[in-house]
Image 1 (tube, rainbow, N blue to C red):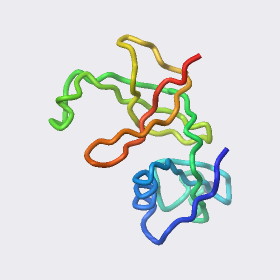
Image 2 (image 1 turned 60 degrees about the vertical axis):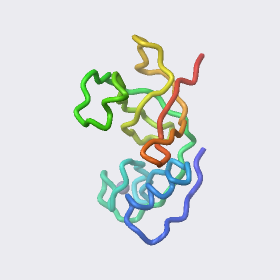
Image 3 (image 1 turned 90 degrees about the horizontal axis):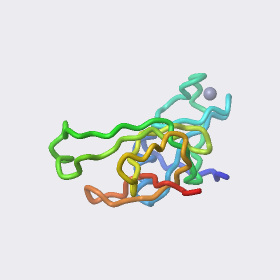
Image 4 (image 1 turned 90 degrees about the vertical axis):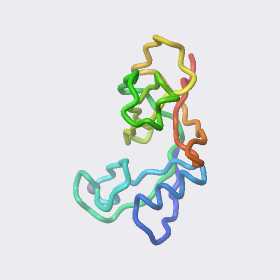
Length: 134
Ligand SMILES: [Zn+2]
């Protein structure tokens, strides 16, 4: 389930970030070919149309891939080691890079169902995902 979200006058990235600040995960859907995507951009990545709308994600997704970092390539993340970076596919289609939260060490999560869970970091809500369970 998704609903159309009205877009204020700004860049797609700014509109996407403003929705995240409001704890809503949005993505774009092309009116010409129905492709849905993230990250936010001016044209459809499939057919290059600029005729698209914002939709709000249900928060349901599946883990496509993930890695665990044991080295902080950015010192702001040093306190988080080890931490994961994952690619999840939203139920509505778009894939996004995120972090998985509340994982047990060594747990294999490829293909598992996850749910959107916002966490505050750097003074802003960030979209992360947690396992939905059986
Ligand atoms: Zn398109």
